[in-house]
Length: 364
Image (cartoon, rainbow, N blue to C red; front, top):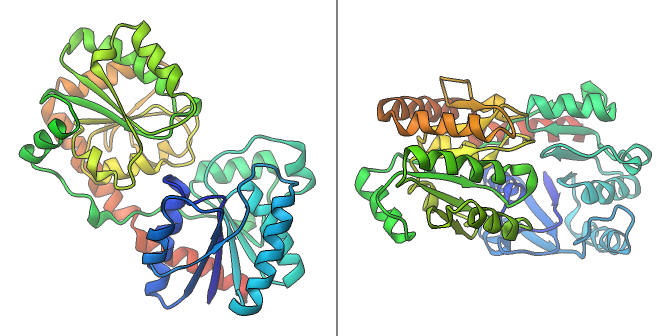
């Protein structure tokens, strides 16, 4: 098949990682992959994976935009050469673009919903859900069916997959070495890898850290990511008097660089479709703490593959983190169980095969 993916951009993040993983897997299965976007830091990696990159001016959040029209014209022209069999959209604006292309060219299209949407009037007037809708967790499927009345027989749950072989348990020596390379001490590191956005719950983690430091004064918090709330979060650490124990680092494509320095991983999201960063931490064998919300509940079986905390509750979050810092045996057991769970249920191969099956159904 000739498969066209459309994304607003190809910068570091969950959607770009998802597309890259699919590209690698689908290329191995003999398909031709075309990726249209406005560009980004990962364009070269996409090309190295064997995809053909098609630049389009789709960098917009508006569902009615001249940039969408310009992108339609460009991709209609590309279709004369590439003969797309199916279109795969990954964001709201690319859904609108894919729907227009599908209608004018007679090509089926699929949409992956990577999280939760606000109930806006344009989503009801122009639903643009495609021939099939891939939800990355059962919670996202329920959200689509309940809040947007998407037909349940159109929604297929396919969990994000990761290349589990890339994530290994690091030796004590390499962990301490990596901590020093990041400017940290050898003391325990609590970490998070996520974009700096209100919905990710960083503020609650920082408040929890103040309580953790009362019990473990040498603990450190490593926050990896970039986003619009950074200044607010830095101010919060200063106001709480814990700035010396909190370290902000920019986003990285290869998360192993930072996960290898962590002792406990925390995902305190207020909403979460599934949580790629959490999955990668679990695959690395790290003990994890996550909010009892959304797709996180699909990953963390409380007291088995990690610990669940009440959302937006910094006190409960601090208690869960402290429990793990205080018990090395429990950290090891939870980390090992988490790694096994990811290995058995969230492989890239599984995601690729299930997505390919959806494509074939739509093409038929």
